Amino acid sequence: MAAEGGTIWSNLLPRAHNHRRFRALHALGRRGHSRPRDRFDRAWTRQAAAGTAGKVTASRGRRRGMAGERTGAWFGFGFCGFGQALGSGRGHQVLSPEPLRAPGAGLDICRVSASWSYTAFVTGGGQVELSGSARGAAGGCKDAWASEAFLVVLRPGPGSGPGAELQAWAPGSALRGEPLWAQTVVPEAERKDGPGGGETQAGPLPLLPCVRAYVSPRPPFYRPLAPTLRARRLELGAEHALLLDAAGQVFSWGGGRHGQLGHGTLEAEPEPRLLEALQGLPMTEVAAGGWHSVCVSETGDIYIWGWNESGQLALPTRSLAEDGETVTGEATGLNEDGSEVKRVARGENGAPAPFIAVQPFPALLDLPMGLDAIKASCGSRHTAVVTRTGELYTWGWGKYGQLGHKDTTSLDRPCRVDYFVDKQLQVRTVSCGPWNTYVYAVEKEKS
Image (tube, rainbow, N blue to C red; front, top):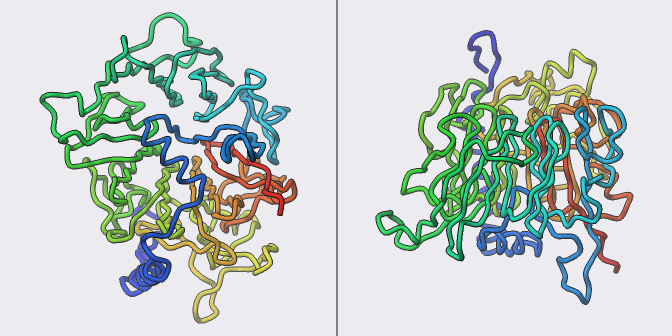
């Protein structure tokens, strides 16, 4: 443990960190690099390759084709103080998953992008619908990304060419009039003067499809990436950025005062820097919270680091102990049968384990019963993970019900959202807004 500026933070001993790394490498060798992804993951990847995937991409009832399609729906829970379409929307919070009350009835929502005060819904037909402090709708859109500063919309370029137009709108404009700024985006393969040799990129906003650049909510709004980075996903936190490249490597940059970059220090990084602690462990997912980070490996392992003020890392936190909430010394925190356990954190010698405010190195997080993860998303101070079996686990800050456990309790351990199990639903994907959570789930296959 170390103290800096009055903050206690964990600098995992090299032996402990190497032990975690050995476990992950052992699992990788045992399970094999070629382990097939689940059907939904492959479908999402195909959509991303076509440049149509969003932060959350799922089409209702279309995963198995017309002959055996399963019914799917979006659900929401958490903060809705600005009238966001989130379940029933009664009051300022929804404590348990409820079917999404979308702005337009019957919309085929394929992406949800949530900011603090409003949410953007993108449909399979290219419609963008806003709900919350920002209202309005527009057609002819390929993607949308919501932030408090502006709403970014990606539209097809003029004519029949492969280019697109990137537009930034004031959230209160209702998508009417003129955008704050607009820029034509030309696919890299079409550039005569650019590097890449015909290579293309594909990923949801804020990463720009087929262009080595991304969008930032702060100027400069359009930010190019180094020619050597072949990004397939990019996530922005409050002060930092995470990039997943085509080889499954993770890069981070920006502010690091809460350890959210994962380089073992609290220093900032002006340019993308390879996360050496995870080098050699191919990742399939990255997620950036307000000041914490998560990634998921090819074999379903979860690595997590950064700020732990509300237990969002699933590590013991002082704030929950002082509030009388559960504190556990293990990342699992549940019995083998999934039932909750409340106990004080303990170290190896039986003494109380230290509270962890900042974790500047990636830590391996084990889900209950050894479950594998396939998706991850982060809110401002909460975390959500989808397992390969279609279950949803959440933890961290829960003041507005964003954890989905029918209360406002914060948790420093992964806890299953039982609603979907009780309703015989399999979760396919999850997207966290800063203070709320959106989930897409389908009916379980009948045996």
